[in-house]
Structures are given as structure tokens and as C-alpha cells.
Length: 284
Image (cartoon, rainbow, N blue to C red; front, side, top):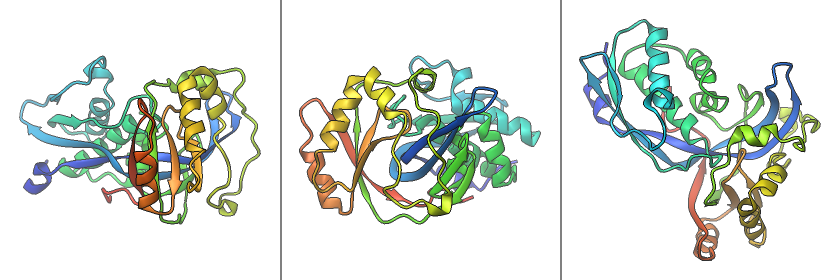
């Protein structure tokens, strides 16, 4: 089972995401938090290449420092897809990693989703988007949205989607030099877990905040410093932390304004500018 030759030769994008708002609206009996959020993709992210193998092995070309191969989300995604499709295929996965770990940009989840979508095509598995999303959810709550592939209002643990139309925007994303463990933020006793729910069709750009921000800012003062600096940008339409942190962003209507804010970053503060996109670059 194999895809077209030119598909094996290409690179496969794994874009970043940001959360335009993120509310914790409850908690299930099993401990999982119930969320409402809006996901938007950015035209910035990781890239993956895949090479077919005849020995049936799933191998990382460049293992991530400190991450055992068996724990790597791309390896786990490839094995999960292979088992679900009932095939005996091998692959070498070459990940070019640009998105920071523990940054709230969905890097690991996006890498896993791209692995599922790419190998579904390359191995001719022919699983539907819904089937891939179900596999992805077992790898992480953010994986399904990348497979869904559209800017959307998400609910539940992040697996129920209502597509949304968003205005054009450019984002200055800042990258604090800290990695924020998602589990630590959700374990915090002072995390708000009862924000009133929003009807998806009633949401408008600019509504809502990030319930995880106060906890992350308290535990990681560098996050608070980045947010304070971004919120002082006069032309920004909004500023927020994305996901559970640590990355933060400011939204601008014009590229020139985002670039100007990037040029003004203080010494020791890193960031990048990216355009908001409404569709994943890999279309299922």
C-alpha cells in the first residue's frame, strides 16, 4: 500500500494554532475539563517528511531531545494508524521542529495530526476524517481540530466543532523562555471551572478570555510580562495567552502593524509574526 511517488517526495506542514478564547465550563466525573474555545491556525509551524521502509519499522530520523521514540506523538500516531488500517507498513519520520514545546501552539498535536493525515494518504488507508479524528483524540485533546481542518468553535474536551468565519488578521506571537506543563495548569486549585457557557452561534470575535491565564501568569511571571507588554500595543485588536501557555499573542488588522510591534520587542523577548488562516494546508 503506498501513495503516489510525488506525495512521498513532498513535505507536509503541521501548522500552529492559537485559541482566540478559552473557557473552562465544567468538569467530567473522570476528571477531564469541559472547555469552550475558538481555534485558528497560523501560516507558521513544523514540517514533516516521510520515507517508505521495507522492514516494517517506524523510525524517527531525528529524535527530539529528551523524548523517547516510543513516547513521540508522531511515532504513536503512525503506529495507531497502522494498527487501525490493519497493514504492515514501515516509515521513517523526519520532523523539522520550529514550534516550542509547552507553548500552547499545539505543536505536538499538530505533528501527530499531520502524521495521521499524511500516512493515511501515503499508505492508502482510506480512513475518513471522522475516523482519523477519533484516533487523534486518543493521542491528545487538540489533535482532532487539526484533522477537522477549519477554524472553529470547539466544545467538550475539544472534539465537537462548529465552523466559524473570522476576519483577516495578523498575529504577533511571543515565546516566553519557559515551558508550561498543561497538566500543572489544569490541576491548579485556583483555576476557574464554572465560566458560563456560550452558545456557539452567538460567539463573535473579541468575546471571551482565557481562564488559564491567571494561573499561568501566577506560576510563570514571564508569561505575565509578555501579556503586559502585548496589551500595551495600541493598534492590537486583542491580546491573550494561547492554550495553557506559555506563548502569547496580539491580533492586528494589518501586517505592517504586526511587523512594527515585532520590531519593538524588548531585548530578551522573542517572537514571530504569522497570518491567521481558516483552513489547514492539508485538505482531507
